[in-house]
Every structure is written in C-alpha cells, then in structure tokens.
Length: 129
Length: 175
Image 1 (tube, chains in turn cyan, purple):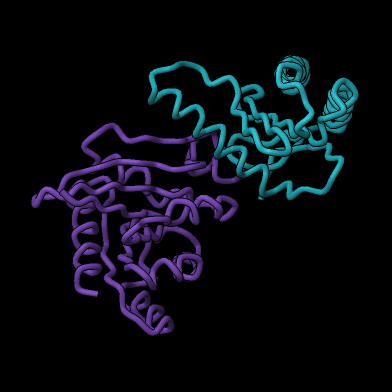
Image 2 (image 1 turned 90 degrees about the horizontal axis):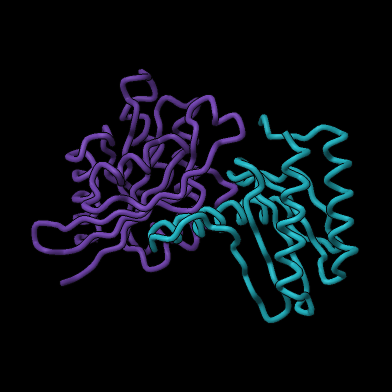
C-alpha cells in the first residue's frame, strides 16, 4: 500500500520537535503523527503502544470531534482531549491531512500540554510539506 | 413508536455513505477525511468513524442507519457501532478484484453480530463486471451453512436502499 511517508530530514526534524516537547514536559510519554485517514507517519514513544491502532483511532476521534462541533453549530474543532484517571490524550489537526497526538501522564498540566501541542503544530506545519 | 438501529458495512467505495445519503430524511452525519493512500485513486475522501442517517417506515417505526468505515484498520469502530444494532446490510463492490473474498471477510468479522441478528447482502457496481455472478455468491454462502438475501442494488437510488432495509427487517422479523 502506498502509505504517506516523510523525508529523512523531515523525520529528523519531527524527532527533534518531539524530544523538545518531552523535555518541556516530562509527563509527555508519547507523540504521534498520523494521517487523517488513520495511517501512522512517525512517532516517539517512551513506552510500547500499538501505533497502527492508535493512528486509526486518532483519525476517527478527531473526525468525530469535528463532526460533533458542526452538529452543535460550533466552528473549527481545535483539540479533542481524552482525560483519563491516569493521563491525557490530546489530539489536533496538523495541516490538512495530518494529525498530531500527544499522550501524557496524569501529572501533566493541561494548559502546558495545550501550549506545547499548539507550538509543535506550528513548527511542524512550517517544515512538513 | 419503536426504533430500529441498522448497520451498513462493506468495502471502501462500496457506497455506504451514498446509501445513507440516498435515504436519510435528515442531512446525514458524515466523518469523511482526505484519503492519503492507494484508495485516493478511487475517491478523494473516506469515512473514518461513522455515517449516520434516519428514516421513518410506513408503520411509523424509526430507523437509524449507522455506516461503518470500510477499511479493516477501523475494525474497532465496527465493534462499537454494532452495539444495540438489530441487523446488518453488507455492501459488496463487484468491481473490486475479489468480491467473494471481500464478502467472506466481512461475514467473518461480523459473524457474532449476524448470528444474533440478520444480514442482507447488497451487490454494487454490477454493471462494471461480469463475474462473479449471483450464483457464485450463493454458492459461496453455502460454505457458511446458511442463506442470506442477496440483492443487486444501485445505492444512489432511494428505492434500492429501501429494498435492502425492508428485506433486512423481514429477515429479522421472521428469524
């Protein structure tokens, strides 16, 4: 299957951005870029997680968030946040066809996670074609 | 007034979203996103979570239609969407390489749900291929030890979608 791929330099840049995010918040233990239709592109995980399954699920979750916003007559879904007893999963659109997902433990500051994720999207969007 | 939840599944591009759009009385809920893989040759967007539409039958029963994503990587949505469902419409795109294998794959993955409820199989894009013919599909179903209704449909036509829904409801009622 012809899945989307990024260049070697693009991959390197993504990994640098992911590492910075993890440095800025030690609660962050997973960052994933996937496509809007559920394929994994690149990731940095501190623990093992099923990347293919998560990529598909994040595509679904973000699409549902966007659809729910439309049905509720609200505009432009910025984030979908799944808040759990032991952590957060925050996902947002990265350019037109990509999705950025940030996975963090419960000691994360949600405001900081927002900022980190938004900044990362801005950086990545400039670099990724 | 009773309410019925039905599920529509099938291969990517088989016409699940189109079928729901053709018959829904309210604007369908869609979760289409850009396709980024080989499927882009066939269509620009694909359903990644669910489609939803509703209609009212002549006897006043409300039918809620839930369309699944077609790709197997969204299998987790199949399991979520069948919860509380009363029957399955399986659309098989006959223009694909191996429609019989496609049918088998969905019958296998929805086997538990089908056993508890019922299924109707809709063959789409019949005009784009000569084989397999209808008998081949029935022969293949023999392997499953059962017979399900198989209909040749154009899911762009409301009456064809209605036919599948009525066939499914009859199947469920007389099971």
